[in-house]
Image (cartoon, rainbow, N blue to C red; front, top):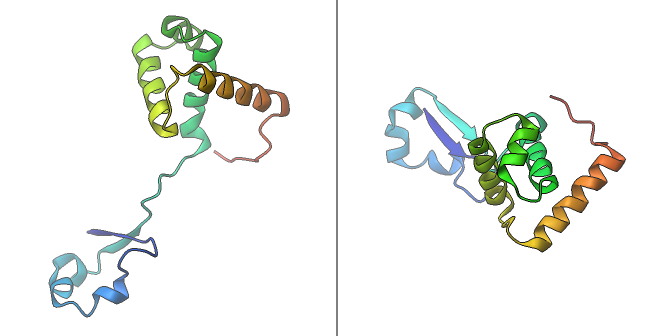
Length: 120
């Protein structure tokens, strides 16, 4: 099976059909070419634990153990999620301005609620 990048900037199947090497591939002969979206997909269900962890972490002033106790998870789980949040958002929660911004954003979400109408 071949996962073919479906972004418009990538080569498309119509561009590859004229290439002898492409046509000779077993997966192409077996019609096992599948489009693939390279952009990350985020669902509410997948992100909810990260948002909850961020809120507990910020409410606990960065105390991993306090956040873990609030969430009823192991402290290493909180550490992992915090690193994942930082990586996803390309930022550092060690920066007080970033913490303030996220704290305010979470408070706004709590106040107005989630009006996007997500489905799980």
